[in-house]
Image (cartoon, rainbow, N blue to C red):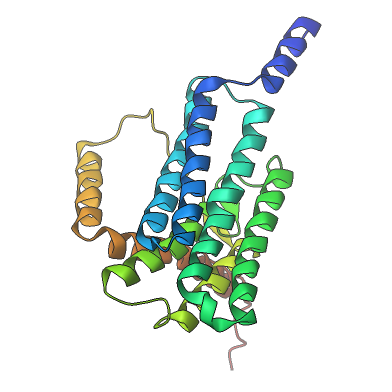
Length: 251
């Protein structure tokens, strides 16, 4: 049993505000805000790259909190609000400014579907965090959805396409990313990977190959990476349905 002093100490820890992990969260929030500003100024490549930087920083704050034992309720709520700006508002504004302005009401409708889906996805995650299977995400994670949208803009700009050229494709991709976030499709969380566990030398070699692969063409390869992750949930769902289907009656 936990005595009264231990319980009070745990409650104090949950209510506390710790500097180190919240620095990473603030940096991620700034990157998302910077992406919004750059999108409004027409500097779309800077905005797309800023969203990827926010994604990296968002992945670090939770790991830093767990490694330093500085998790808190404040940090969890702050991280969720930062995610809404960086992975909900920023990608939707980026897409609207880049491709949706000429679509009229359909443009802001597509952008709002993504933004609202990100908010619903984060709210569902916060309310189900204690009951879901830690091995999987329910619905596409908002950072992955943001990376898919930002990656599409980045790879299009890198290949000389304008938002007007791809406005309908961009709208379909944005709506698809939004609906994937609020779906019930399972996505691997990769939380079963133990970073402190010893690994074979070949694993380090594969990590090096991964970085080389991304460095060859960052816009294209990052977009393909997150597109593959987004589609992986649908592939696993189809395989699960096929496995669960009753066998056909043999003649």
